[in-house]
Image (tube, rainbow, N blue to C red; front, side, top):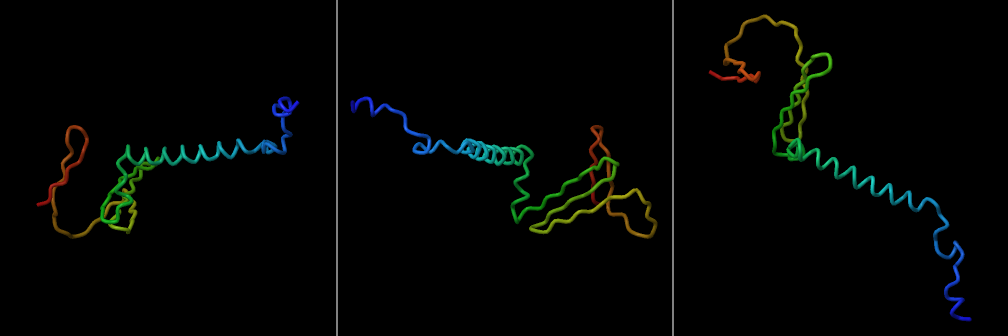
Length: 112
């Protein structure tokens, strides 16, 4: 008789499987690990680790859907964003250098 009593099923309250949301908590944890891994991969692919280094200097050129350019610069812990406009400026000044457009479309600035 004691052999039969050992194989009897216990009620759900004793096994701890009464809560149907325990599996959902595990899925949430897996989702968090996946998101962190995805962010780390994106930073590695685009070589953006310098954004977190306090001694680095980074310049990003961003073009909006309306064709407006935005220059984002980071020096140390300071981040500054500048918008380039198509407005013409007149005045006096001195020539600082020359810019050349290469065959592949890149622009090279040569200081004098």
